[in-house]
Image (cartoon, rainbow over all chains, first blue to last red; front, side, top):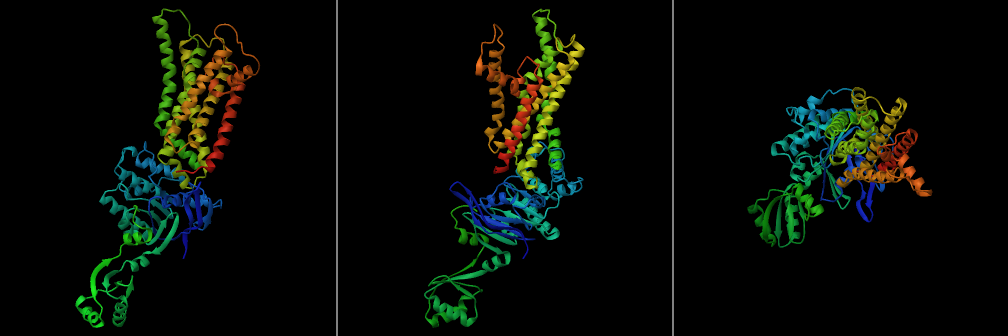
Amino acid sequence: MEYIFKTNNLEKRYGSFTALNGVNMAVPKGSIYGFVGKNGAGKTTLIRHLCGLQEQTSGSFELMGIKDNDKAINKARRRIGAVVESPAVYKDMTARDNLKQQYLTLGLPTFDGIDELLEIVGLADTGKKKAGKFSLGMRQRLGIAIALCGKPDLIILDEPTNGLDPQGIIEIRELIIKLNKEQGISFIISSHILDELARVATYYGFIDKGRIVKEMSAEELGKECRKSVRMKVSDTKILARIMDSQGIEYNIIDDKTADVYSEVAFSTIAKDFEEAGCTIYTMDEREESLEAIYLSLLGGDQSA
Amino acid sequence: MHSVFYSDLRRAINNRYVKMGAIVSVVYPLVYFLSYLLILKIAKLDVQIYGDDILSSSYIRISSFIVTAVITGFLAPEFSDGIIRNKLITGASRNEAFTSLILVSGIVAGMMSAIASVTSLIISVLFTPGFGSLTTIEMGDYILSATSAQISIAVFSTMLLIVLGNSKISLAIPLAVAFIMKVIATVVQDKLYPTEGVCTLTGTRLKVYTLFDQYVPYSCLTRTVQYTFSSCFVGAMVLIIFSVVFGLIIFDEKDIV
């Protein structure tokens, strides 16, 4: 698999505090990478390293195959767009002037494509209104438009739906999917809204205490998120025997609890359990969500 | 480098603080001249105003504050709105981003000085009998030394803002430095050029006071004795070189948050 961004034991320390603790992360090219972790887990610190805003204490990373200590890393960064923390906009300029400014910074020869970008993010009719007078949602859209300047290969979005209304959230989601599918742009998205992230991400990375605890594809997550019936029985060994005999997939949680991955009709299996001398106490239908995976991996005492 | 520089230059041209600075550099010499005339008329004094008075006593005397305020207003969004962060994300190196801002700040200060000088000269030519005791060369020396001092103050303020960035308090520091320097310069000049009697300073103290008076750009813009172009220019160059070297070293290691 080809990776657009890859870290190797990346570490960042501030005195005795370790913000990144040997991070090993790999973002597949062409993916929408959902970056999930609690506040202070190290998401933004890692993004800042990727963007060249901070230097690591040890370890290394590769961006588009170029090592972080290679002089060409700045050229590679010209192929990324990012909205880190808050959108970087010139408040005393209009949306159009902001994009012109970004075009100049990137050294693009013409201002072609600005109208299209404004259209894409829904800011085409803002006219002479200065960005300082924009709502938070409009600034977020402008930040995304700025990130899109120069047709980047990788876009990093830190909480992209912050301040957006439901319609705006849908539009941004559709935009991300469209850019990913049509132009092959890779995304790294950190978001607190896990359900929203689950609608777009094709790959996930879970970070906790400065360490990547798990990376998985959407397919792998889908398998873990399958519908199941959680059964509490008097003996899971008997349950296992019955399920094996019927060819039903299951997962033993403990002596009395198991998840059964099939739509089990109570009337059908009740007799088998009675004959085997096993009592069924409860049966609850459940569906694992990204949130549940998140909670099981990282715990739920703080927000994502 | 040039793409970041063009971008910064375009922003300076459209920036309201820079525009206000340009307006002040035109209006202040005019207001100063008219106020002077009004006071003379009210006091019924028959005193002649000369061009060198307008030049040295109007804009240049307050230019360290004006330049610092304009540069602070212009550069404040670099950190507060994430502009410098965005430049680095788009692949500009730290040296490029820093050098570009230094160049643009210097250009802004130079432009304001030029506008104020031209305005003062036009007023002098149209409404005064001449430039008093100053020759044309001395006048040119004075304008150049004052301009170099203003550019160096702009560069120094830029370095302070970038090095101390990330915190709102950093915005007040360049103005505080300008104020403290102005106070020190006034005290030093009172000691060196007392209005009554002669200078009583001797030895090391005299050398230190003289060094400050002649070489520190903030002092050059406060001084009423204007015949030391070389020392003022050298002082300005030293401050510029120090600001660039120190700023590059610190900014290169700085975490941008």
